[in-house]
Image 1: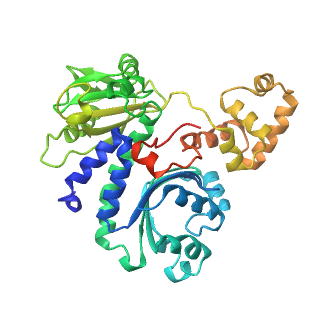
Image 2 (image 1 turned 30 degrees about the vertical axis):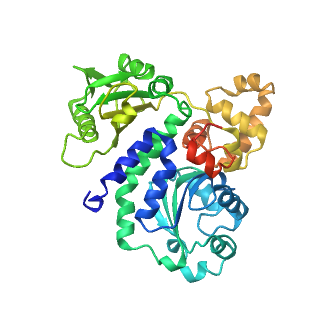
Image 3 (image 1 turned 90 degrees about the vertical axis):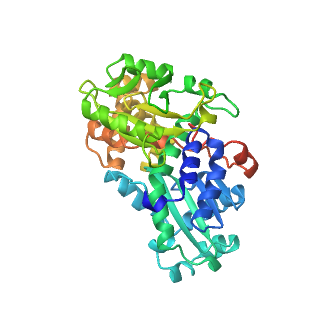
Length: 404
């Protein structure tokens, strides 16, 4: 945290944004200023065609989004479609990080591209740094910060600040995404907490649970590995409880360091997949609908909950036909070829013919192998709608991710 010394207000803003997505424009502006950019954009888009949404500060969001889509097939600052498909087949796992334009290709070479001269130059962009939160197969989400030629290159200090802020920004985006589906403009905290499909626990700064939503109560009552003892959250092992309580203590400000968040996975012998837990500090104003004083938010996601796989994503990733993608989804949902045929009102022989084509296109050899490959694309279901958001709408409220 040494690099963040003197920037406590930025961390506060990051975690305020995690539970209030309407603060993203303010956070973008502060972050861009912190590392010397003249503008910044929060983007979540499909890498093949760059369809998605953009929220920008310092530039017009709609114009920037339109330009990115127009030049999507001429963007030298990303992998080619062939490289993307190969990464998927190889089981590529994205790790949040950052990358400057000069790490894709030398600046002199970049300046000779159509992308630089027809997109970047008119917008007074000479250098950019992309801070990636997630790349769930073909959907990338993160923040781009832009500099003009007169501002020079990003310094080592700028890079260090980005690295220090990265895990906090990722947590803010993750929580914003989870809340976006249930929170409306002006909706009270208690309302959207209780409506959320995620387990949400509001704790006071001493770590005592003050509010639990319905999903959270179901997790506590089941065999998830989450426990409530003497008003405090715990896990099914002393070590897991120690780690969880350590995150809660730091978020509650029980240490000298600034209040920060964190994440961990809670495993249980009764479950195939762990619970995903994110802990974040909340200000007194944000917690006021439930109680007075600073608070801690604990968000628990059940990774065994049912999920859906968009057919369009399969078509884009594997070049499946509409009929093939429907068969693939039916098999992914656990149907055998006969039941899939009944559901889709086609013959079992047609299902098997489609399945042979699916195996060939995905380079798999069995339904088990296909299911594993498709499982790696599940998170791509969380994508922004293809409609751009205006600057005005962004300032009022922007749903970071909305289901297709």
